[in-house]
Length: 372
Image (tube, rainbow, N blue to C red; front, side):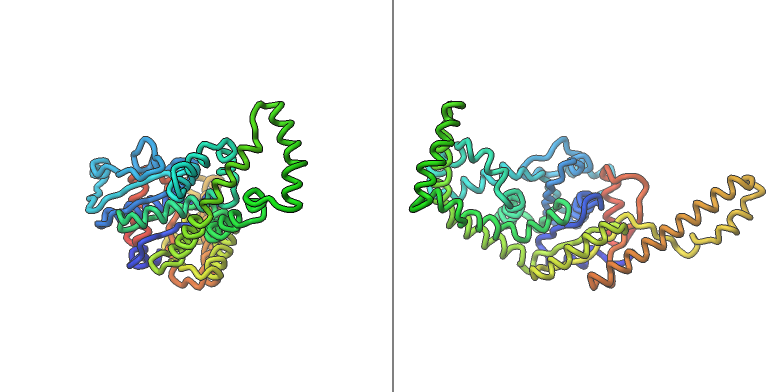
């Protein structure tokens, strides 16, 4: 293994961990946060991983939308001296977006009009970029509160994680778009459409359901019109946070074809967005030392008398397959180092079993820190 995660995060306050699905981003994020906290920092790790593996690994019954402190007593039996503090949370995009509405509303009446609206309950889950914006909005909130020395953000698979980069712009575009303006100031043809066709449709729905959806829609969009300036300002602040020199992105990949392609794709988008690339972690790699390599024919000959020819042949074939896999992994890592201009990636070998507990996180961190 090469590289040291501590050196890469020196002077960084926010670390965003990205990569394709199934490469170990959640466990890497948790291990990283655990190591930073053990070293003396007050750290918050934020995950939106639906599998909830992070809570299990940290010995917590559940995680919510606000950080919970991991009890140092849980870590002591594992030989971890916690000099800092480790906090963890599971992002709830809906709750975060609702909280943002409440904060940005110019008055209590506007807040209540939006949060109590039946259309909003559905729309808040569907607005393009709202979930991604919620994640970086929570990141911004935690950073602004100033309670943590470091914040580690686990992300969804990278093509979704790219939405973090442009979610502020897409959400602002929605609030400034023609659809919203049509509801805010329906004039001309739009007014006739709203007054005729739309009214007919909503009138039929009212007779069928007993609910005046047109009133709900009109109230919602007019109320949200009062939030446009607040969202615009918050979007600008979020963009500035992502581009801040104290923010860095770590890309996690495994040495298979698709994760390698995803890592290269995400790195390119980071470069286009002029956001900081902090380093590459290649997880679950098969790496063989020189003394672990042997000629399959020699292995077969050496074991034939003891195991019999058939079993010795199977052992030799397994050794050959492992060496071929190690060679393919080495080629994948070489491709990544070249494409990402990263000559010193952190390579984590394939561990025995899944990382599902604190001992596993500690072992993973040792590899990340170069002491494994």
